[in-house]
Amino acid sequence: SIAGQDYAGKLRVIVVDDGSANRDLLGPVHKIYASDPRFRIILMAKNVGKRKAQIAAIRSSSGDLVLNVDSDTILAVDVVTKLVSKMQDPDVGA
Image 1 (cartoon, rainbow, N blue to C red):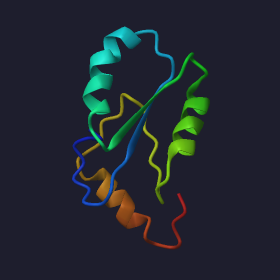
Image 2: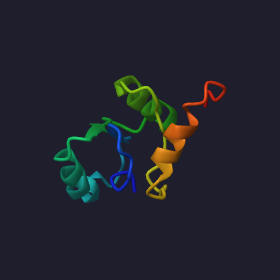
Image 3: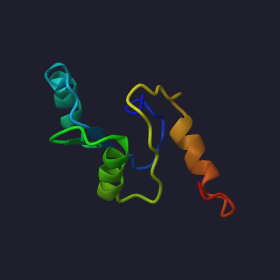
């Protein structure tokens, strides 16, 4: 659902595989998005937990806004556009 966003701005996606036990099954998915210039895939050597996976993604981020979602999250195609517009308000911080 992230790949299908209608957002007109620059979209960078960092996917963190936190040492998933089924990485062999995910290999084809990793390969599809590895060739998409919007995507960067981080493969953790072992499962260190969600918090450390999030930290790895945030440290690799360079944008003004960071959106964190779980792998099973399905977003409507306009979610990023709507979130970015809301973040233009200086009274909104998160």
